[in-house]
Structures are given as C-alpha cells and as structure tokens.
Amino acid sequence: MLPAVDFELEALRSRVAALEQLLEVHEATALAQTVRLENIVNSITDGFIVLDRSWRIIYFNKVAEQTFLQMSKKTADLLGRSVWREFPDLVGTEVFDRYHKALESQQPETFEFSYVQIGSWFEIHVYPSSDGLSLYFQDITARKKAEQERDQLLRTEKAARLELEIKSEEVRKLNAELEQRVQRRTAELENAMKELESFSYSVSHDLRAPLRTIEGFSHALLEFYASQLNEKAREYLGRIAAAANHMAQLIDSLLQLSRVSRSDLMFEQVNLSEIVIDIVKILKETSVDRRVQTKVRLNVHAAGDKKLLYIALQNLVSNAWKFTSRKDDAVIEFGLTEKANALACFVRDNGAGFDMAFASKLFRAFQRLHHEKEFQGTGIGLATAQKIIQRHGGTIWAEAAEDKGATFYFTLKDLQIKHEPALYFAS
Ligand SMILES: Nc1ncnc2c1ncn2[C@@H]1O[C@H](COP(=O)(O)OP(=O)(O)O)[C@@H](O)[C@H]1O
Ligand SMILES: [Mg+2]
Image (cartoon, rainbow, N blue to C red; front, side, top):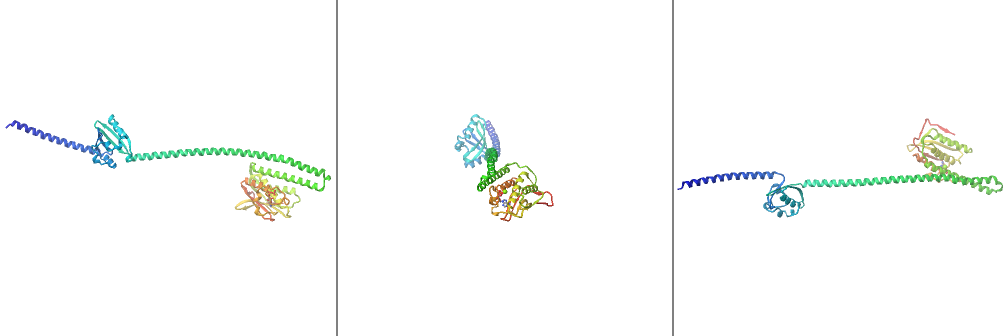
C-alpha cells in the first residue's frame, strides 16, 4: 500500500494528539486562572459588577450578589440582562449619567449615591475600558447616617448657640434698660428730695413768719390794750396765742421728722447714758415745779449718729416726763436689758401708760392716745424716734398698761456697757 501515506497519516495523528494535549494544558491553566481571579474578586469587600458596552451585566461578585438579594432580585436571572431593564428606577439618576459619562469619556468616575428606593447609600467607583465598565461599590449607609446625625447635632447646637446669643442679647438689653430706669428713678428721687428740701425750707420760713405776726400782735394787744379789753376778749386772745404756739411746735416737729429721714448718718461710739443725763437735766431746769426721780444706767454705749440718737432719746424721755406729770411719785428709768436673746435699751416710767391694743399705732405720725387737754403734743415724736432707730438698723417697741406706766425698748448696733460693774446715776 502506500507506506508514504500511512506515514503521513501517522504523523498527523500524533500532531493532533500533541495539539490536544497542549490544548488540555492551556484549558487547565485558563480554568485555574479564572478560579484564581474569581477567588480574588470575591475576597474583596467591595461590590464588583462588570457591564459590557451594551449595558449587559456580565459579572458580579458575592458582595454584589448580597446587595441584589437585599433588593429582592433573583440573581440567577441577572447575567446577560441589561442593567437598565433590571433596574429601571436607576434610569435618569446620577448613576445613569455617570456610567454614560465614564463610558463616553473613558475616564473613571467616583461618586456617592443615595438609593432612595432601598434606603441605602453607596460609594461607587466606575472604571471604563473598551469592553465596558467595571463598577466597585461600597455600602456607606452607616457612615452616612452617622454623618447626618452629626450634622443634625451640629445644626441643633448651632441653633441653641444662636438662641443663647439672642437670649444674652435680650438680657443685656434688659440690664441696660434697668440701669437706665434706675438712673432715671434715682434722678427723679433726687429731684423729689430737693423739692422736699425747698418745700421744708419754705414751710419753716414762710409759715413761721405769719405765725410770728399772729403771736406778736396777740401779745401786743394783751400788753398795751388790756385795760380796754374785757375778760372774754382777753381769753380769746390767750387762745389765739396758744394755738399759734401749738402750730409752731407742729412745724418744728414735722421739720425734724423730715430732717432725720434724709440726713446722712455719721457713725461713731455714742454714750447714750450721757445723752439721757443731759436731757433729764434740761427737763428739770425747765420745769422746776416737777419732782421726778430718775435712774440712769451709766456707760451704755452704741454705734450710731450722735445727733440723731439724741433726738430719739429726747422724744422718749420727754414723753416719760410728760406722761408722768399727773403722778406725785414719778419715776423715770433708763437702762439696758436682755430681750428675746438680744440687748435692748429701755426708757421706763410709771405714768399714764396706755392700752396695749393701740401699741402699734403709736409710732405713726399724728397718732395720739391721750387727749390734747390731758397731755399736750403733736403726735410726731414717736414717729421721729422710730425713723431714727430704723435708720440705724434697730427696732423699737413698747410695753404698757393703762395707769401702770410704759416702757419703750429699742435695739442698736454694738449696744454694750463700757465699764462694769454697773453704775447708776440717780437724781
Ligand atoms: N411714756 C408714755 N406713756 C404713755 N403714753 C405714751 C408715752 N409715750 C407715748 N405715748 C402715747 O403715744 C402717743 C404718741 O407719742 P408722740 O408721738 O411722742 O406724740 P406726743 O408726745 O406729741 O403726744 C402719745 O400721744 C401718747 O398717747
Ligand atoms: Mg412726744
């Protein structure tokens, strides 16, 4: 037969066998490579999808598959299908625009996308090639939510700070207004005080001048025309003079009350006992017909304004003097005692006293418990004494009973006996 043909056939067969063997080796290598590549692609934590130039899905990794499952997509059906047909809600979105742009320009694209339909955020990297697009994506919903929460917190904080600023501004304005109001009020008050001062001045001068005229002419009438006047006329003139005198006293007391209310306090150590002794001495000199036994605790000191404390004690001691005037065995005492765990001074007498039911009324101006015919007065003395004690930070009160005498107590700062043992001055 044709040995040459046989030989050639044999050679061809062995060539084919060799080629088949080579192909097998190549196929095995290719498979191994594919598996390796697939392993690599599946080991990355990003989602990975490959699209061809006609937008067909030609590959996706495990992470991408998980995402599709979350969207209730049947992953088995996806390969080879058009991405826009499978996900029509993405048509016209930023995803759609960016993919097209990347494919046309052949430039990579990176962007964040909120997939509203599934409530998730993705960061997407698009890498174009002549075959289509490779897409890497990561679910960044947790990070975005944290960012949104942080933004919300920042906005809330900013709003709170703004509100605080507005409130502080309001407070500042209110303070400024208040300051202005205080200044205005102070100015008004100063004005009112000045008016009061000039009023007091005109009262003392303008009211006293006509009073002096009345007093002067009634005395002149009594002195020079007494022989021409009958008994009745002389009595009337006497009454006119007495009324004018009473009015002069009223004016003096009111002026004194207004003066002690506003004069500046000059604090010093004051020996109250000496003041009382001085007042008693003057009272005894001016009414020699009175027989009054006085007992004064010596060296009672306090911190205060000497002139004002003199006026207060003068009012208290002269009241004791006056309201004992109907007693034969009048006794007036000045001393220091403990009242309600505090030291208090007192001026005590055994005179007319009064009903304690009216005790609180006494300290109001013009309030008198005794009739003018019985005991003369203006009713301003205790109001003046109280004003002085209060301006020194002390209190004043009374204890009395009708026909059993009265005791007036008052407290002052630094009230004390300077030198023990206790000494009394009696007269
Ligand atoms: N030592 C006292 N004993 C009794 N009553 C007093 C005594 N001191 C004050 N009073 C009563 O308090 C009133 C008010 O006193 P005061 O303001 O000094 O006015 P005045 O001495 O001008 O009457 C007196 O009218 C009198 O009724
Ligand atoms: Mg009096």
